[in-house]
Image 1 (cartoon, rainbow, N blue to C red):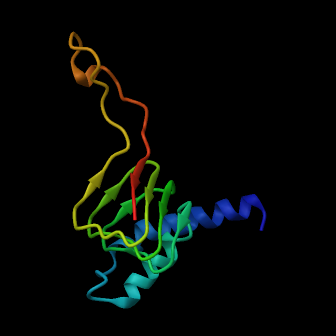
Image 2 (image 1 turned 90 degrees about the vertical axis):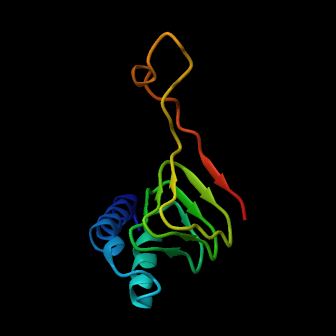
Image 3 (image 1 turned 180 degrees about the horizontal axis):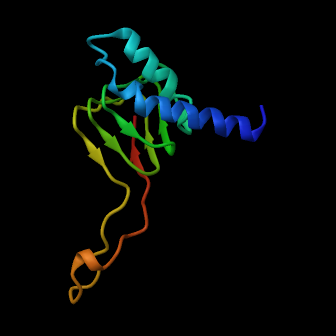
Length: 125
């Protein structure tokens, strides 16, 4: 498959995930919803292991690398480049940012210092 078609497929799966998949019932309520989220999510992230559970309302971006039997909990937000190992369980409403406001100088308010460079998030097995 050429590069254009791969990018197009990833883009379509990402849009479908965020417009439909993440709004489906939780995995406890519907195994079918869980399978649809996995099918869509696994096709637009960098790396997705087997039996991964993207829960209802889980938000993440294409820079995600997630291992086997791991899950992103209900209403979680994972931003930036993130590496999640195998067998990782994430509770509901977790928020992980790979960037923050710069805060090096005390003479300038933090909201006027811009942002630090993003740092990858690593969660082991």
